[in-house]
Length: 116
Image 1 (cartoon, rainbow, N blue to C red):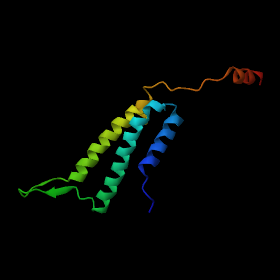
Image 2 (cartoon, one colour):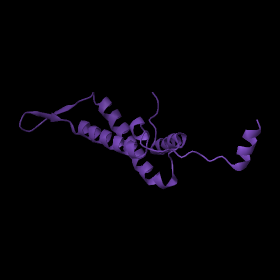
Image 3 (cartoon, helix red, strand yellow):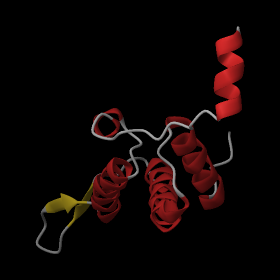
Image 4 (cartoon, rainbow, N blue to C red):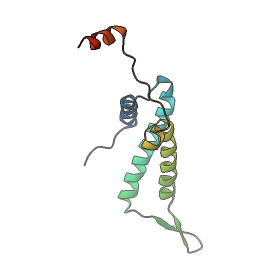
């Protein structure tokens, strides 16, 4: 079985994805750190939920059933991850609303490309 990614691995992958999309700035690193922590927690809880046999209900003292705490946590984490991925422009919907920074071509590169 594959080893689950660490928080640092998730953070590095997120930064690499953002750079590839042209939306990364160093000022976003604190938000990226929070996002990586959320994804790490989600992965950890998902593994725990899977190992527990996907138990989605627990019994109450009154004899009824309610949503298991782990499932409620997973749902909350999903919503938080989606919100952060929107802010970091990591999904198609949010990327459509942003103008991407494109590296400027130097004057030398411009002259050399015109000579071809």
